[in-house]
Length: 206
Image (cartoon, rainbow, N blue to C red):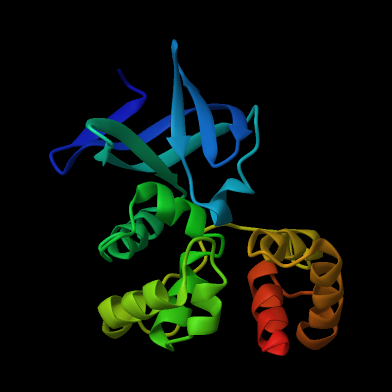
């Protein structure tokens, strides 16, 4: 099967196919006669377009849910993103599903927040409370530094709509998110990336 890439390290390492649809936190990928249901982190999911060919790096695990083992595969745009995710789920209590829902900002921004001990950003992530944020910092802070994990998803500069969508995923009301991004554009400039706009908006909100 030429569309599957496997290595001794794991059952599935990389896969290519055509994106059939994106629903919730899942990508439906057509691979030959198969249709695979792949989880994906929120920061990446926004840029996956139905109908387009795609190559994903995978993390495959059997996760215990109730009294049964459920096979789960998470798709990433790069090996470094997968490596970050693997370190993120090493924190006790953060499983694959919880991590994909929490990661609505890219690994580059999340690594910087962890390195600087920014509890405010961490607690703004879906499903991450204050105690869990402290746990993440205690476990991972010494392993990250500012500037780790360069952004792996290429986006158009000045994407205010994408930045607003990120804020809404973080729980900011739509009307407030719009005004926050408008103000962030004045500070960061129209050439700022969505991640830069979100960071500027969140800092101003503190």
